[in-house]
Length: 299
Ligand SMILES: [Zn+2]
Image 1 (cartoon, rainbow, N blue to C red):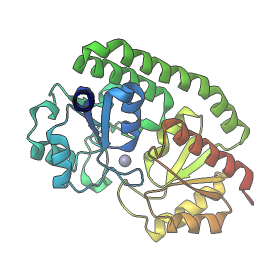
Image 2 (tube, rainbow, N blue to C red):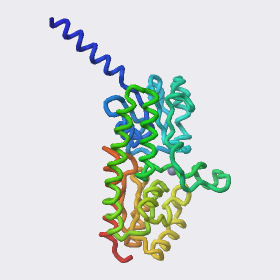
Image 3 (cartoon, rainbow, N blue to C red):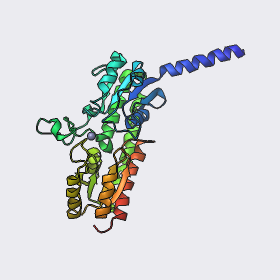
Image 4 (cartoon, rainbow, N blue to C red):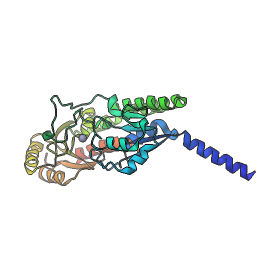
């Protein structure tokens, strides 16, 4: 009897682990979104940590091993991971997750990008994203669209759970919709209008919350600030009464600290990717704006 129950138990364990879709994502934010939709029917690994800059990642052999048996690869897209994900996909030798394969999902295919260059870009303009700004994950409205598309993709890979995925995607969308008014009114009450960031990572967040991106600490994407650029920024912060510097946590803060000391604007170091869940990420950004509103002096 004991033997039979052990056999049955191990069968149940192996069956349930086989039934889960194995999903690999490039960022922790995408991991969280896939988990919101797939819950216990997916097993998700993120290739990068929440504190890591997803533009520049080393294509490690261990990533290829993770992708070898994956049912699905979820990337941000719009060329954010262009420097490394192609090598990982090739090295994985898994036809399912190559571009155009049945398990490939590029979130950027489902959103309208901002800051799409009008002219052909070249490297002298820095590490410019040729298909527009790829950091759309900080706009909750665009993320609802991505989550609905994820629901459809998971349903194609696992049709028996279609209703389950659809319901979870709808639940996430409703939770976002009910959180938005509170977030918006808190940003409005902060009276913050103009913001300086390090990179253009926060521009979708700023646009969607009615804030204005005055300038970036880096003069061009991927190019560290020069002394001349910082002096120009100090002047601009004073002239345009910028009270808020949001420094994305995966970039250095020395230049941001200098701007804070020289201008009296508040410096907030903010997360860019999900640490626990998507709501906490947006909550942290809204809170940082509130702190800017409270703490600015002399501007
Ligand atoms: Zn970028």
